[in-house]
Image (tube, rainbow, N blue to C red; front, side, top):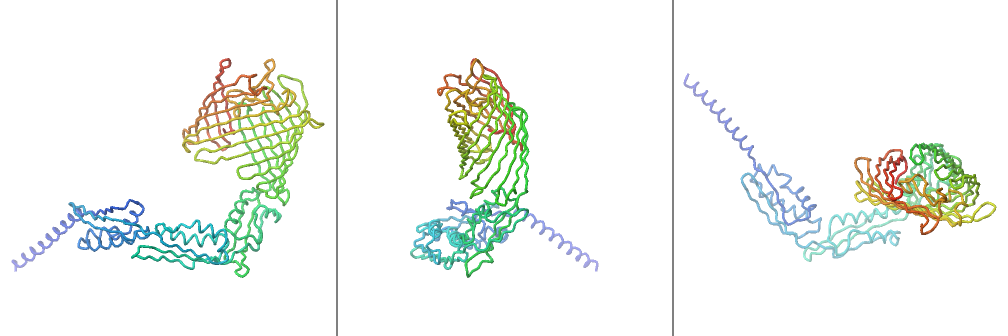
Length: 598
């Protein structure tokens, strides 16, 4: 009995020992499980290669393949077939694939050597456009833009894009019932050719039906709203027209929220019309603007403005603006009448009172008149007629002098700049042409032209740029002292000639600057972003105002320096340290400015 008991205990102990040894052996084996690498040769396109690696069975079931080596041949064969299928969307229908499998210690390597051979080309392409839109401009454009072309490699991407383009282009053009009626690829593997057939039925063209306008806060006249949206009943119901109308509503400045929504699901399939909802929330009746700044040439300056939006339901507006500094203060008002296109055309009645005090002259000026502004693309033109009444004195003539001038003017502004990274890039050109004819309303005959050009060219859009600027002007008077200072030309200041006080330079009499008949200044610089909104600039500028067209009566002033700039919500904060370079007048000048950008 004792003997049997001892044998039983020994047998149980042996079983536990064996199970422990097997478990340890299994753990040891698991810790040294082989790894499987998949190599694909013969395909240089990374997009195609990634698609294959992501989708073949051997890649998706790596763990299974490693733990079931007896299934490896089956997985290799299945992956071989899958590679052939995965290559077809890229136009390869006759690839030759050889498979190799090798083992190096615990590294298993499955290699697929792919010979792509000649891709399948589109031998015949048939595109049928039926319906009322078959002879339309959009049909011609769609056919020209179709990604599929006869003779091209047949790819699934181009095929799907072509199908989408055929339906989307007609739908967006107003053929809301357009549908693809046939789409087929016929492949002849014996001849290795492909035929693609696509057919679309455009249906009828839809137009805009009833326009349901809902307004909040203020009701504008419907004809004024029509002038903004440029959308009317009976217009073609195109997505481009709707998108453009919504942008015009947002850009008009009259609405805080505006949306034109076509109710396509409620379209009238009998009369082929689409009702449209126009939801408008007018901007607040009054808006206020406020600004502060400082410049060594003007001292501290503040500005305040008020815009009265809801003067009439036809969009007429009234504004009042004040800007004040020790050197220059201006009070201005304008009453705006929108034109037929309120975003690009308007008439305005303007009035302004200004006071200016510089080292060379003091002037009080009143002007009033009428102006018409028109915008088209990057251009803006303003034609105006203003009456100027002035009272002034200069260092060359300290006596108070009155002047009056009736001045027609043309202003041309071209803004071809855009935001490119941290900087703006492009050209800004401003031209002002004025004239006066001696009459009871004008003291002098003259033609005056003033032009400024600014060009910014980023070298690296996030870090540095080149800057170029120039000012040029002339006035046709025999004696410059016979016209008011605001029509004369002076040099000096941050936006004119760095290194010299504001409007302090020009021809002189007995050492007193009189202003000149001509102006020419230029600046070149390179600006480097330092960190965040900080940047520094090295610059060189030169020029002067003169009475002779060859500038022989004055010295060409030259100066160079370094500037520091920081972008703030109030405008750029800029500091300039400038060294003048003329031998008889070498000095340093410090300028500080907030709110004026170069």
